Amino acid sequence: MTLPASDASPEARSHARLLRLHILNDQNYFTHPWKSNRRPIKVRVTLAENMLPSSTVENYLKAIYLGSSATGQPDHLLAMGQLASALGVAPGTATTMVKTLAESGLVRYEPYAGVTLTSAGQKLAAMVVRRHRVIELFLVRMMGYGWDEVHDEAEQLEHVVSERLIDRMDEMLGRPEVDPHGDPIPDAEGVVKPQLAQSLLTCPLNTRVTITRVLDQDKSFLRFIERHQLKPGEAIEVEDRDEASDSVRVRGKDDQRITIGTRAASKLLVHVSAALLLVLGLSVPASAQPQMPFGILDNSFFVEEAFNQDAGIFQNIFGVHLVGGGDWEAGFTQEWPLASHTHQLSFTLSSLAVNGATGIGDVAIHYRRQVADETERTPAFSPRLSLILPTGDPARGLGNGGAGWQVNLPFSKQFGDTYLHWNAGFTHTPNADIDGRKHNLFTPHAAVSGIWQVRTMVNLMLESVVEWADSPGGRETVYTVAPGVRTGWNVRDAQAIVGVGFPVSFADDATDVGVFGYFSYELPFTR
Image 1: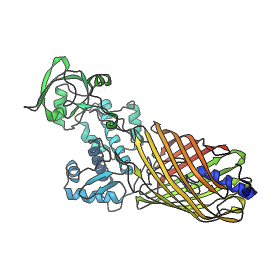
Image 2: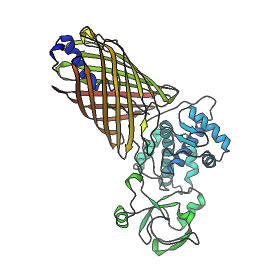
Image 3: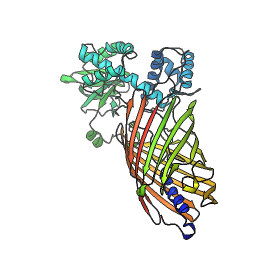
Image 4: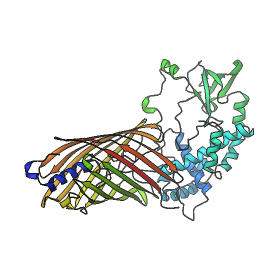
C-alpha cells in the first residue's frame, strides 16, 4: 500500500500494512473480534444434584419440544397448563421443574407466559425424540410388534439406549425419515426434514391424497385407523364434510366408505402433490413454510453473528490469515457465558508478521449482551463492547501503541436455507503510537454476509466488509469480499468446525488477496 509522503517512514508503512491486515482479521476475532456463536450441536448439560432423574428431565424437554412443534413455531411459548397436562402432573409441579431447567440453561421460562427450549434444550429434546421414533420403527419392522404396541415400549427404552446403538438401528432400517405413525425422525444432528401436509379437514375434496401421518398415539385410535385401512401410505379421497354433524366422509381402498368425526379427521395428515396444489391455488406461502434448522449456527470468519454461547458451553477459536509478501496473522479467542447466554465474556490473543517483524499483537477483552433472541419475525441482536490493550510493539508495526475500544452491533436472521448477518460499529484508538507520534484514530465499519446451508453440516459463505480506515495520512476506504466454506463434526459432547476463506481487499491503490484458515472446538465446562 502506498502512503502519502508525510508517512513515508518504514514504521509508518509497516503500521499501515498492519491496519490493512486488521481490516479482516481483527474485526473478526483477533485484536477486536467480529465473532460469536450461540450453541454447539452436541450438548450435555450437567444438572444440579438435587434435580430429578435424567429420564424426568428428558420427558419435560420432549414434551416442550412436541408441544412447540405442533404449533409449527419452535420458539413458541408453551403454556404451563398445556405442559402439565401433557405430562400428567400438577401445574405447580411443572413450574418448579421448569424453573430448575431454566437455571441449567435448557429452557427459557417467562412467568405467566410459558416456556420454550433454548438451543441446548432443543438439541437434547430432538435426540430423545429421535431415539423414541427409531425404537418404534425397529420394533415394528424387525421384531414384529404392532404399531399400537410400540409407544409404551419406546417410552421406557428411549432413556437407556446409547446414541451409538440408535445409529446402528437407524442404519439397519435404511435411514428412514418417519416412524410407523408417520412422525418425522430427527437425524443424527437433531434436524427434522420439513413436512408439507394437510389434514382431512383442509385437503381438497374428491382428490386422491396419501395419508402420511397419524397424530394420536392412543391404542384404541390406532386400532380404529388400522381396521378401516387409514394407516400411513394408504390412498384415499375426502368426498364430503358436513359441518352440521361435524363429520367427514372418506372413500378408501376398494371404494370402502367411512364417516368419521372432525376430531378424528384432524389427526390424520395427508400429502397432496405440489403440482395439484399449484393448480388448485392451495400451495403454502413461502413465508409460512417450515425452515430447516441450521446444523452450524455460528463460526463466521469476518462478519459477527448475533448469538452468545449457551450456559455451560465455552468455545476455543483458532485462525490464521496469510497474505502476500510473507505477512500473516494468527489468533486465539476463547468465549465464556456468564451464568446464562444473556451475558458473555471473551478474550483474544494474536501474533503476527508484518514487513519482516514478528511478535505478539494487541490483546482484546470483550463483553457482549444477548439483547434479543431470534424469533419468526425479528432478528437476533447482541451488541458487543471490546477493550483493546496495547501489548504489541508499535515501533515494529505490531500494535497500536495505545489503548482503544470497539463497538459492534450484529444482527442475524434466517430466511429458508440462508442466514443473513449484518453489522455496524467503530474502532477508536485515542492515542495510537505511529512513527513515534500520538494520533487519535477513529474507524467506522459496516458488514453483511450470507450463509447458505448446502447440507446439515456444510455451509457456503459470502462475507463482505467495508471499513473507512483512519491513519495519519488520512482516511482510506477498504472493501473486502470473502467467499468461503465451513463444515463440522460432533464429537461426543463437543463440536469441531473447520473452514477456509479467500478474502480479497480493495483499497484506493492496492488489492490484497489472502487465504484464511479456521478451526473451532466447543464443549461443556460442566459435567
